[in-house]
Image (cartoon, rainbow over all chains, first blue to last red; front, side):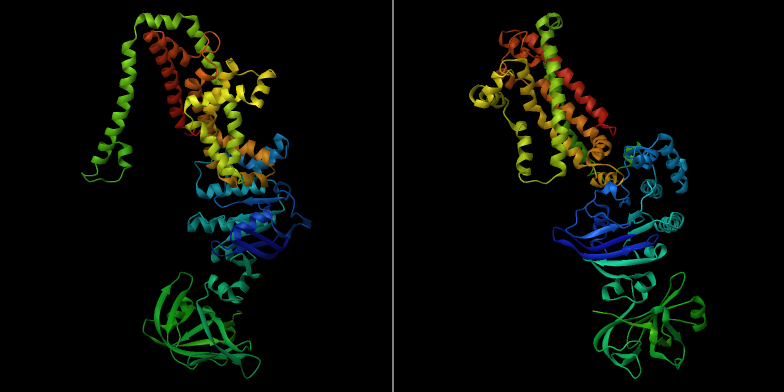
Length: 350
Length: 275
């Protein structure tokens, strides 16, 4: 549905560098990256609000690179929603339909149907000033989708909301997406937010795409250190890599040797997925597992799981279920053995 | 304790002096102006008041002041909206100079403005060509409007620019994605939101035009019943020794201007006018 090929755009010293992205029809796509990475600028280029220097933007098979924003069929929800403060909720939602000179009764029917879909049917006569953040967000989405665009782009749509409202709105966005089946591009800098809505995503840094993939791929197989850090990978190390006995390789990290599923050479960075680190009171570790001895330094209840930090030859974080921690009878200062499967080790690129 | 007081930070006894001391300066200035006007009011008498109310030439001057200042205001707004928008939204070569030149008439000594217009229309080829092709300004009622426009349009442009500056550009961007051209985004989003600032600029421009005196005297003179406006009436009356009549006319002018300035502030409490 959306095909961005070699998009280059610069403003001042900042530059979007040869961006390539493909969003399939009906896909919910997350565009992630830290503040200043160029996410919003990329969205504005997609909407036609910035004139790109090189590359092309294709929407639904049509090259829209040089087509003005109003003819691109893109529904745009900017940061902080940019609702028209001089208009009521109804007038805001009807704005795009009125520009299309539709019949008044058609406009009314569409506006009320969209308002009901977003759960703001009772607010249509209200002004914008008195609305809560969540209500404003719903009005902005209603305004963007009422014209039935081919693509919906959301620029940090929930960043201004509190945590519970954020979860609620993300759930609604997902429901809305299933209902409408519209290709959606959602900009965010929050991993949890992206995971709660998107099928696939891309991580941007300093105007360039670092990695594209499904959400589990981005989390478990980050391509490089930046993506690993952005995805909050906890056990990030640098060690000496060498080919192993069989297909895999070995990674030497001080006194520890870990087997890895790929054979690489030289200084390499790698991560160990915390959810795949199993802790036990005594050994030995099961076959095909790496074994690391250490002492529990911290135990934190994260709600859905427990986070245990082990000090030893290396600092190692493990995510365990509450049941596993109870069975372990974990307490700070306890001697434990960490069993790490070789597929828990993921070697990063440069 | 009033709700407004409750909204203030907790203060120690030393901090209470700050608003008291600062208020003294405000009170002194306000009192200075009020005393001056009161002095004028005390000087006038019933006969002077009757003259101002009944004299046809003063009624004519008031009418001239009214229509010329309103015409000037309309012209100022006509220029202020596009000029203010361009200065606010676009970066172009010479923008800084254009921005400074827009403000220049504000700092013109009044006599210089009149002299400049007079020299332009009397001494330059372009000015003479305009005068000779039916657009006569020098010593003509039309010249009053031109003079007032030169003096007051800057206020309207500055106010409109500030209003456009305050409007988030993303509102226009959203309008563009919703089917607007740049023109319709301007008409349906930007202009309605800038309405308050544009209106405030119009009121300022009108007040400035209504009170203009110096440049008028040089550029259009003060021909009774023809180019005389209320401000020049004051000058003429005091120059022939009718000080009381001049003061009543002055008080009339002050009262009208004061009503306009109060109106700005009253409307300023609503989203309609920004000043």
